[in-house]
Image (cartoon, rainbow, N blue to C red):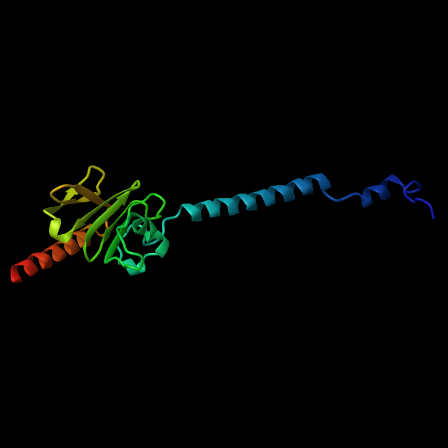
Length: 179
């Protein structure tokens, strides 16, 4: 049995060729569809990585915070190893707790760029809210020797943070008056 293609007519040879524009164009079309799918998956992944966690910027109780987000505070000595803060607010750009404020049973603390501040309830002289130009609010904590601010955006819990500090300070001052 020899090769039958040599004895076939031209019309019969055309029937054996792929239909349409040829296999090359089908392969290109398949490649384009595949690349569009890959681009969609890459775009979705980037979107997920850049999305903000739901509680990321809100003032939350320490029991609602992932343990790894509290680690910078523990490393700086603002929190004990097993201590759960009364309130915590993350201001860090990557939502990793490297810039955040905390309320503990002893006072208010802040960590930012490897610096940290802590004010005991009894050492606080004044706590005031100060609006900023970009619509945010700085809660400024002042002691005799230092001052630091916790910055809150719209609806992030600045009012609750201020009320909690005021309540703790009143509790300390009323305890001093009783003793």
